Image (cartoon, rainbow, N blue to C red; front, side):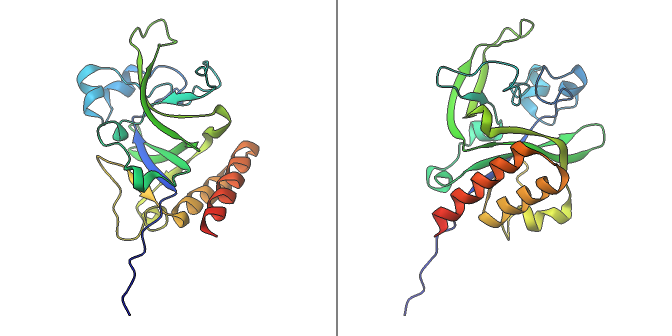
Length: 208
């Protein structure tokens, strides 16, 4: 009898952005830019991630989607095979003040597509580069961010994998559920609970 190789199923992604003291709903501060851990931001003094969670502040596109940017997915786009079942992208950032990493929010039921959108901010004249979009009802920033510590790696990252420093991590079902459970435990949030329910229902249906 031959052993069958079971392909890994990935239902989520964990990606990193630079810190924004305005909750990614307004331009990053000068201190944010100066202390960014992304080379592009330090070199050019700008970031295209500053409005990633401004979906309730600025308008959507013609199809009602709101687009943001995940720098780690720009040069290394998600593999079509690995990403075909991805239902949620968790977004992590390092707070330059306390030097700690936090999961701050997510895009659920995402579409990975590179593009540009006009800047809605008068003081920022360049177009915003984008590579992820979702409906505003599926984009959420947490009131209470989730501290990402070393001991969380075993639950939040697939076994045998390390947290991507320059890249991103694909997540298996148990990782996705663990992160959602941690979010729920720290946030009494109707929108979060609704999205969590739909994510779990969708993944469980695929797994049947």
